[in-house]
Image (cartoon, rainbow, N blue to C red; front, top):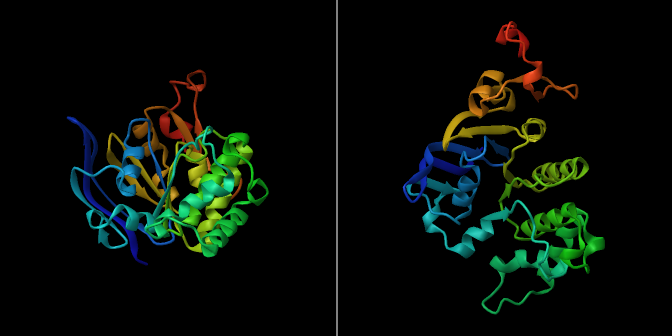
Length: 274
């Protein structure tokens, strides 16, 4: 299976402050690849580098086998779509208008949509279950509905890769599952590669086939969830005690934080965490 994203010794700094350091990894076609790590570890910065918003200061980054710097902004947008963490609530456009914005990289010099573009937008809205919202304004929608609109816009770009920056962060539990189920469906049915940043380790364990844990801009671990989500690795990265065991849903890791009041200093660490 081919690599759709390949980073070699990637580095990025804000002024004199290094954020990404010597980061090397690959994402394969059809992956549901999730990046986890503590606050300030460089997750969003890495996503911006892949999306072409920020330019790496060191190393190299290839998208679909082509160096990132070889892409024009428009050609990159035909291959990669970015879904931000939160959809703007005060965007004065209807759902259909917002979704159609995803066609911009494919339009001619006049930027006029044709029937083909409208059909693609309708299919994207149908796929994300927002067809009934087509004529409503974005500011009339709930957070979960707005997030599905932004995903529909990304689908409308017809990219090979979709990047998502913590798409479930501000959503309730029901909407979190709907968004994650939707991304899994997108990967399975449309063969789109999904690369997501998430703070929710348990959601990542349930959906990802590949995980990368980073801290301080460096990779801590990469691989299948069972390989990355060990209590030794997570405690080292996050600096807090926790339990790791099997989820009752199947062969998935489950991570539980351990509040201070439950820590017994007389119990050996290897027996209280599994």
